[in-house]
Image (tube, rainbow, N blue to C red; front, side):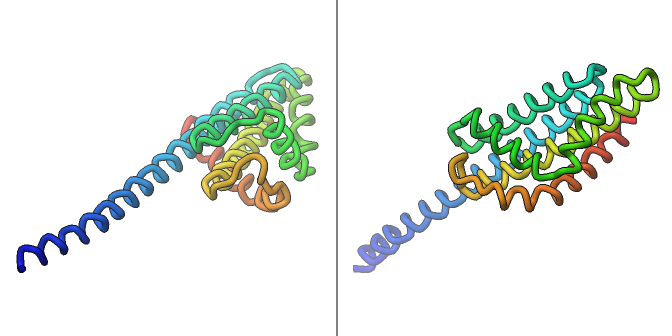
Length: 183
């Protein structure tokens, strides 16, 4: 009888152990995804910073748009979210367009590069800072959205627009710290 009780007790413990192991694996996957997504944000933000060095006005903006789109594609892959280029472009444009300061300052910073000597250096610095901070913010917005189980079809642009400014400032701090580290 005692042997039978032990067998019943171990049968009850086995499913509990499997549940804990399953939860641990799910948590490990979540941490792995978050880490991989944040690495993508960091790498694409640094790439966006380098785009500021492109001396040709508007070419830098086209390259920056491509980097931001590729960043969103990379994050979508991390979270196994089917990627839609057109929807992603629309969302990125909408979120960036919500910030008048960024919408106006990027083309101005790009065109300043056309001014010989002083314009090239100040335009490069401005474009690098603005573009990379915006890239950082876009990346973080998509990481948060996909991490919460979202996809491109249920993306809340108004919520993203409201959150963009604080993430942009966080991105400026990130870029400044990396700029100082490379100087």
